Length: 62
Image 1 (cartoon, helix red, strand yellow):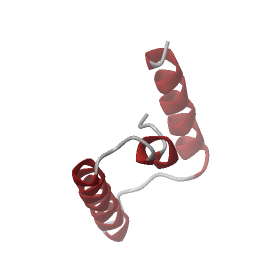
Image 2 (image 1 turned 180 degrees about the horizontal axis):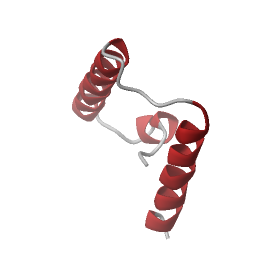
Image 3 (image 1 turned 180 degrees about the vertical axis):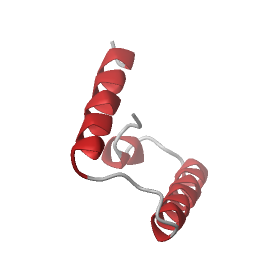
């Protein structure tokens, strides 16, 4: 999982910040397109996916 932007902002250059923001805009555009096309999960399936993502991020940070 990515580091929170608040932690990044304190030590990134203006060029790094713009690259990060451009990347985040691309990710959001992709997500909005997926939602508009009906490609999303909800309910228990979404909770299971989120739990798996959190477990993966926790394991990766060790």
